[in-house]
Length: 162
Image 1 (tube, rainbow, N blue to C red):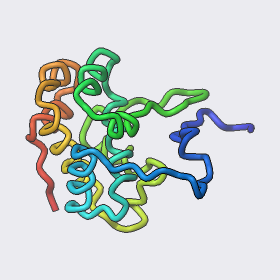
Image 2: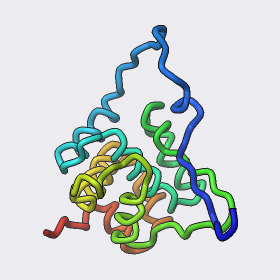
Image 3: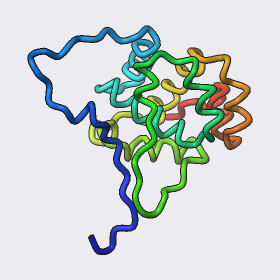
Image 4: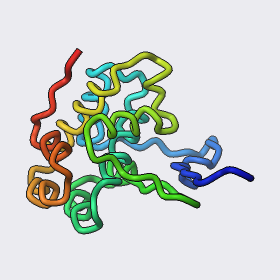
């Protein structure tokens, strides 16, 4: 298409398959439940979509080694939400500040935070805070890999302002 400089897709094949009568029900891990609860407590209506948006955008900032250091401490259902978008064309710059992270989360497909007038900053901070509490072992690797403002967010220094 003329004029298109880049395409970003967060679609995963397993999400695109239609549900069938033989679909098995899986129970979310404790980590997933805690992340979703944090997002819900911060105001997200679709907690899983909000967690997915925050995790994708936050981990997009990480180099492979730091990302792996984070992922090895997470259960499979949470790791499944951490996915790099498929991109074609110009690469969008990963967020360097909390505000850029919040903008990226708002733009994420399916998060539905902007339409619902939900405080995306509160949801983002809550999910990152909960993630940090789940993987304290990854703190050193992430601090070394993150820009200063996102490192401060990871350490719990970002506060929600209204």
